[in-house]
Amino acid sequence: MSKMKTRRSAAKRFKFTANKKIKRAKAYRSHLLGHKTAKRKRQLRKPTLVDKTDYNRVRKLLPYG
Image (cartoon, rainbow, N blue to C red):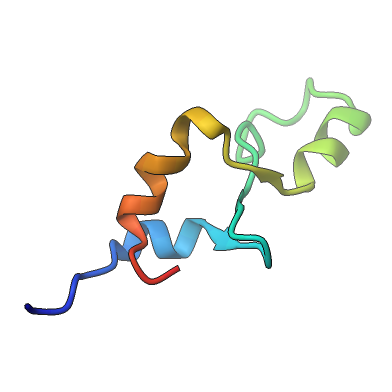
């Protein structure tokens, strides 16, 4: 059987933790930042985990993760 291909777009967006959870960046941090509070922008910098409802979908994109 041939090798499976990794979706390169997903590989650039997601990283795996040591326990095989998937880290992602938060949304709403690219533009229109003037009216958002400093606290909100600071919290958007922190990474978060992919939700369990999306976990299997993301996992299929990254077969060797």
